Length: 105
Image 1 (spheres, helix red, strand yellow):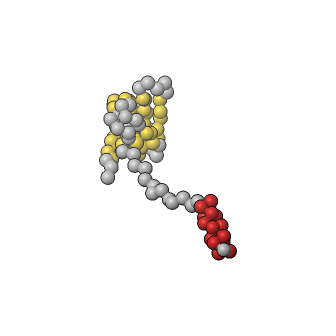
Image 2 (cartoon, one colour):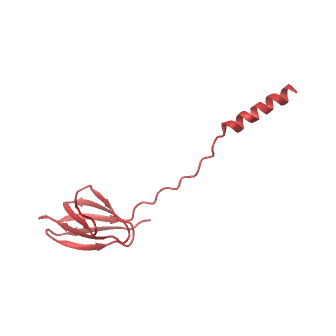
Image 3 (cartoon, one colour):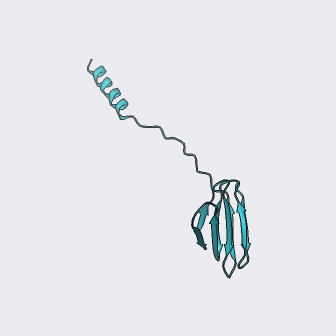
C-alpha cells in the first residue's frame, strides 16, 4: 500500500514544500509553477506532467491566474524479479559428449 495525497492551490498562491522521502508529484488540473532550491531554472507543469522529488528537497509550488490540483504519492516500488535459471550450453554439450563417449564404449 502507498500513500496518495491530493492538493488544490488557489490562483496566484504559492507554498513551500519540503520532502522527507521520494515522492511523485503529478498535476491533475491547471498550471503549476515549481522551483527547486539550488536549481537555476523553474519548472512549469501542466495537467498530466509529473515531477519526481528526492529526500530533503525544498520546493516552492505556485499557480498562475487560475488554481491547480495536484497529487503527491510515494513512487511505486520496483517489482522484484525472480532470477531465471540460466541455461548453460557448455554444460549441456559436455554432458551430451560424455553420453556419446559412454555409449560407444
